[in-house]
Amino acid sequence: MSAESTTVTKTGGFSEEAIKELSWTRDEPDWLRQLRLDAWRTWERTPMPSRKDEEWRRTDISMLDLGSVIPVSRQVGRVQKLEELPAEIRAHLAGGNGTAGLQVQRDSFAAYGRLSGDMASKGVILTDMDTAAREYGDLVRRYLGSQVTPADGKFQALHAAFWSGGSFLYVPRNVEVEAPVHALTWSDSSGLGVMPHTLVVLEPGARLALVDEYASPEGRSPAMVNGAVELVVGDGARLDYVALQRWGTSVFAFGAQRASIGRDAQLTTLSVVLGSRLTKSWIDSLLKESGGSVHMVGIMFASGRQRFHHHTLQDHMAPNTTSDLLFKVALTDEARSEYSGLIRVRKDAQKTDAYQANRNLSLSEHARADSIPKLEIEANDVRCSHGATVGPIDQEQVFYLMTRGLPRPIAERMIVEGFFEQVMEKIPLEDVRATVRKAVAAKLAER
Image 1 (tube, rainbow, N blue to C red):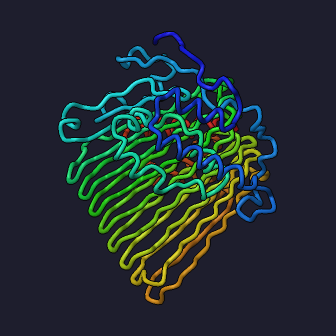
Image 2 (spheres, rainbow, N blue to C red; image 1 turned 180 degrees about the horizontal axis):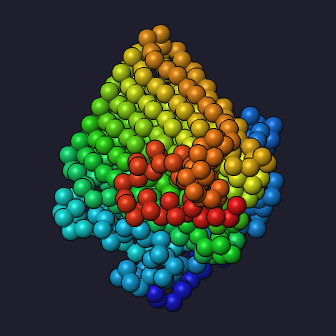
């Protein structure tokens, strides 16, 4: 790894001057600099959310001091070989060598990138967002901000103004990427605001699986993460997207993920949330054309005093579309979770088939889960339903396992692992599945 170079933001803090310096330092095109400045103006005129806002009523961010957050880190040199990355970063690259491509970001900058020659010859593009904006400007300009916009909220506007790094993945028409692609955003700089942007575009008939991982070490974590993920799934395309979050337990993590799903296209999204002090995320799927389908699944395991808040949207905008959602949450100690999910069926979206389920498992009498499923239906020929459960471990199941000779801690661990297994099976990489199982086991061992 080469030595650190110039500091990007000498002005410090979030400001218009810092945006200009960020953009000029990265040699961004004029159109992108203007997008950032427009987003900053949206940020300035958008009120900071408070507990009086319905969507933020259960979310306390009073301990987040934006004035002390560093917008962008110092640049660290890019390496050519995977072995040149620090060992603690390589330890998180589960299955990285066996994938079709790998993109690694450290703090605010790209650190390593690789794409198989076979995929490159077929026109697949995998690179960091900074490079993509310079080298594939017309393509990036067409899609950047097409899904997640500054108008979506205060933190989305801040992201659009200050995003730094992230991954750009483009798959041409009818190209199938057989092996998964892996991206890792790693941050080990305390006090930093990490704002990665993931942009995935699948042309009609394309196919891809992407594992998008976010992590930091305890004691050297960023102060805040504010990311965005935009997924564009063309007609007849198929995308499997996995987001694995393991930030340190001092991090305030905000994120917006939105997907546009074309005619007869298929999308599967899996969200795994294990880290952070507080996570607040919006996960939206927009079924814009007939025949589109989405399967949204999630695993959340909160311990200590962690706070997880997830808002999902299954938006049926066209007829004959299907959505299926299953989020499973386990809570221990004094952890809290909030799940708020909306199935929306537009008036022209006849023959919609939608389901939403949120299952919560409480491992402590001091933990609390709030589940708020909602339906908004304007069509009259649909099949839509939702369900939510909140409850403790079944003591009869624990007793049964203990009668087979298992100590109570092991019996409870097996029940929690079984609770998550239905979702674990959706993870496309065995090494990543093993990583998630190990992280879940580690949380159970802390009890």
